[in-house]
Image (tube, rainbow, N blue to C red; front, side, top):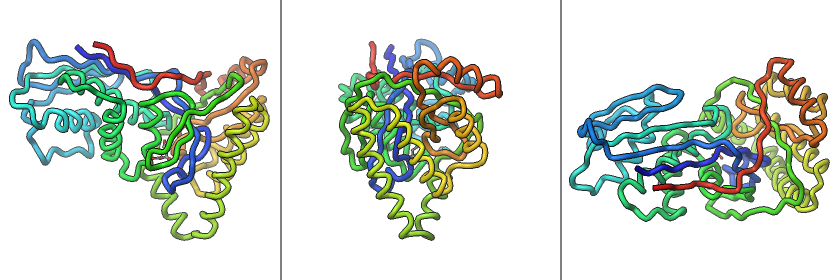
Length: 324
Ligand code: MEV
């Protein structure tokens, strides 16, 4: 039996622009997805996938040889794809049982699909005795993530694999960042699920129609990220919050924010957040607010009183973990 887990993520700065080679700052958080895989003792001819929140499904083992399996409406397709890729040269395959336990809200910008891909690759590699180095896990996880959203920058899979607080630029240029003060982040879930792929297309259309503006906004993102690195090192929470607000304005300009998000952000700032922005693809999803410790309880109580699901998070230093 192999147990692997991988963390969810937040993007502090630079989502969407990261696809166009601008930098981004992201962190893994203390919510994980755990995948337990084992060779089946019974049901030797099936793949059984069971989840804590999406029910269960059984596939015949022959699906691993099936090249026209319709992936579009199948939530579990990434798992089947990973299995296909890992066992493709294995002669005799037995049934497989896979159990998914997730603490990550799905489809709201916290990197649930990347974490699922990373944990599943790590667990299934382990099951077939593959020595899984982090870079190999990452490569197959990104390949899998691209089934869900084709233009992925890879950012979500990288942070879920390596963990911590990170500076990221596409083409796998990433490095850990230092921060000198505890960062109190609150996530507010709009409850509106989004399709990352569709929002990425919204931005691409904006870019094509507003090429010069997009270039200017991209330069602003780069400056924001550079200033944020300084603010993190200095432990300057106020400066960091201000930069988050500036980043939000840019996200609004490229069309991935909306009325509901803007309303929650205004409310956050009224209840004492020093900075607030959408995190991830937008169009719904989650809002990330930075708050001083002494305002935390007041903030949570009031947001909840207004009917919003919100929770405090901490930065998680460990990325993917594997246990035999
Ligand atoms: C999604 O979490 C982040 C986006 O920038 C997409 C990507 O980087 O692939 C919107």
